[in-house]
Image: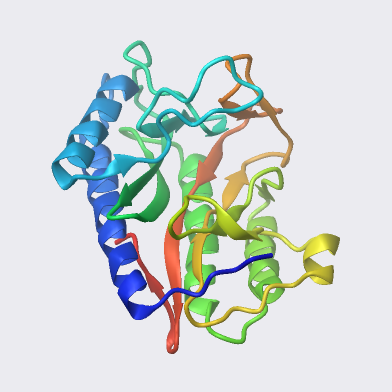
Length: 258
């Protein structure tokens, strides 16, 4: 792995990118109501991005599994959609849905990336519990990350939190380093695996991490729809997703995307 440690100047630039991410997610969340289309939310994200002078990271990304590049500024994933949901004028939110919004931007050469899940209108207690527990996993990472800490310790606590609630951590997608590119080393799993134990990550001051737990109400198994992008749970049960860009600093970690 080629992990880059960022200087205080670079961290400030990453903080500025993170502020744009936070603004976009806040405005999208405020606008998301029953009857609203995910396509309109995407337009809103595009407007904020343009005003900030940023470049949306997701739009135009290519995949060997998809016939076309990703068309959206945001990923808008509803209910059983885990990640990479395509925003569309024809997809309208309904009362009781849960919506995961993922968004990334590059500003003055540095990237920010974050995600959140929230309810549309009035949602069931079970769906609210899923959202709350998934956010708890991210909170564990924020509270525990500090120089010298092994990532396996944090990932183990995150996975255990999901299991205690009766949920499953998605294992097909993990977090990542971030900096001048959206995806950099290292890979940041939200669970403990044999691979992680063999190649554990010891956190160091200056590391930039995009930590993003995805948690399913049922099993951890997922599949990709025929569009080549949208990932859904195999059992059709709901999924939630939270993410922040974190800087490892001397005192612990700082959240960049707030």
